[in-house]
Image (tube, rainbow, N blue to C red; front, side, top):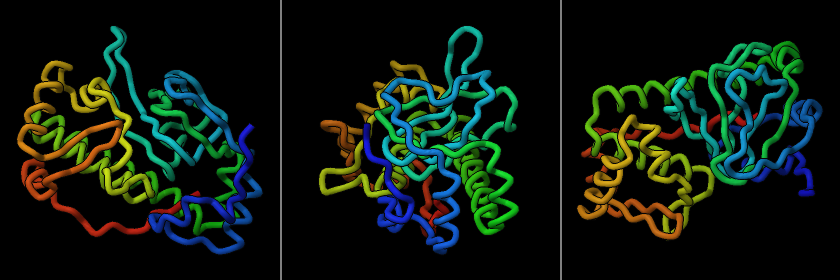
Length: 244
């Protein structure tokens, strides 16, 4: 069994991607935390139709939220990286309209649903942080909707690669060889509403144009300026995000 990491020495806090908390807030987070859970790649964190009895912070690894149609077709709604909060995307205690699956082996920090109200009552600042996190994820989903609705296949993939590259880099998953990138072409296709064949051809075309490389599970943007122009992507200053 992996050791439990105390909230005060959470490795995510040293990445610089997250806003600081007071000692009292960190002590409170530790007090309501039930523990940590290991989930293997490909396993479900939340199944469609489940009510769910816990909230989670993704401590390590990648996951994704998805929704499936009755014939099995899947739409990936969002990719989840370390620091992302899971469980407020549906009404607490009600059946979830989406599922969450581990993309890699992951570690989750677990919080009981019933303590959510204590957060708002006892630490309104943390309650505001939760609200901010929900609003931030909605912005990400809005951007994905814009991509699926208006961008071409090349523009969609360029946007996704830039977006995930920057998110992964911000939480310490980058290096000189690029960032860890566990997505398959099927994941990209399911996120962008493309066929697997079209996804494969478009990725090969962008790689041939010298815009990126993907080797040994690492993504490197070799011409980020050209990639940004293709995606019509304009970077906003990254602000520190709340961490629960």
